[in-house]
Length: 274
Length: 328
Ligand SMILES: Cc1ncc(C[n+]2csc(CCOP(=O)(O)OP(=O)(O)O)c2C)c(N)n1
Ligand SMILES: [Mg+2]
Image (cartoon, rainbow over all chains, first blue to last red; front, side, top):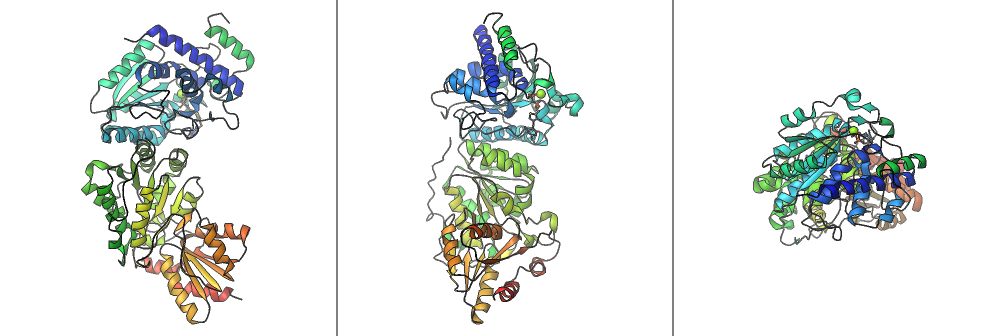
């Protein structure tokens, strides 16, 4: 069984690193990085088989960050796992940094594919899953999407493909924080019901609270047991989760914290301590 | 993951079988793919509901477990191909040129090329020789669209023999490649000793006054035109530039030094294709008078492919006319 308190502590650390690197960079995506912290923590510190010392290890599980703007989250978790030194995080978005504004697989080990243009990652995850099956590999593929992102038509092409080819080695996760840039998803372009849509496309759908570590872990375990169809974890989340002043605010989608905001945030995350 | 060991050797694949054959380049593709499939288990093929037209159906019949019909969903096809490549496969993704490069351009740029995924996009029905289906199905911009993307290699073979060779070369090369094929049956042009190399132009004959730089279906027209011009006493050469990117700059310089006039000829818009590539390089490095023959910034239309070539001036006669008008 998973050590929940360890995972919660890693999630907390991850939030701290994300906020620090974003503040240093002066730009980047705060809200959508924070909303998926608990999910990504469970993936990297509980579920996925991977080797930070050997990022290209054949037997690894693959993670595709389809919502590439949450790059700070991916960079922070890779650093905390030991793929590279934590200090590298401070170079986010700077010239010549391997930490590009959106993930670039050619410049940073541990990134499976370059992302940033929304709507494309699930297709790549499908291709990885197909390739792994052809290679008779037992590795699994995880793909994290935004909820606004699923407005892209290609996501539904890919949803069809995953089910058509019975990709039971694939698990997609939707970070359902209910916000996109211009406001609430249901107001910008209604995406609901998400669960019914995926069920109709032939997926196994698991609905969870995306900040409840126990639920996340149980869902990831359940997805692994499903045969002959892909699984979707529809994770209800809060954009900006963990920092009250950012929570649920569309405004913090694409802006970095100011140093004052960082101070307030770190205080909250450190439980009043410094 | 990453680089896949390719054990295929040219000799095992009977490339010579394609020599001297008058056949559509897409047919050559269909046959050579099956040969590749036999020799290399990493070859996988994707299509978007056009496998009978692109001829990938042959591969599908022989290797059903390595063929993925993606339905009418070109964007998803390119992304899936990238994923397959990143798991160590060598995917060939095929559909019509306009849908491959137009509908899925951003997927090719962002997901395939920016990740340097080892995907081979082999598009058929390039150019106006698509014929009766008309403008919606005639890609006249595909070479331009692919050429601007960093890391992309762009190849437009002229006949069945060259097609078979460039497909094999693409499978042995690591990185994204775009190969443009045609619908119509085309004559055999390249000699038996021809050896395709990515990025290497083939000089049929170097002219002392005029040199025609062509690829695809226009290579045959260039050769006919040069015969007429040489008979007229105008020393005219013909060079096959099947690789548009990377451009064979060394050969281009050599050609320019031996030319009073250079003609480029392609079954593509005069904007952005071979003519543009040649003009860009030579205007910076060795300015020579250049005239570009191609479709002049207009859409195609319906008609038989032979009529269409005449209609748009993609003929030996027009090349001769343009040379005479400009050689002074
Ligand atoms: C194809 C594409 N269009 C537009 C954008 C710009 N963009 C970046 S993030 C974003 C909103 C994403 O919302 P959502 O998927 O809900 O992400 P999250 O809320 O998790 O941050 C947009 C429109 C993009 N990156 N890609
Ligand atoms: Mg959202």
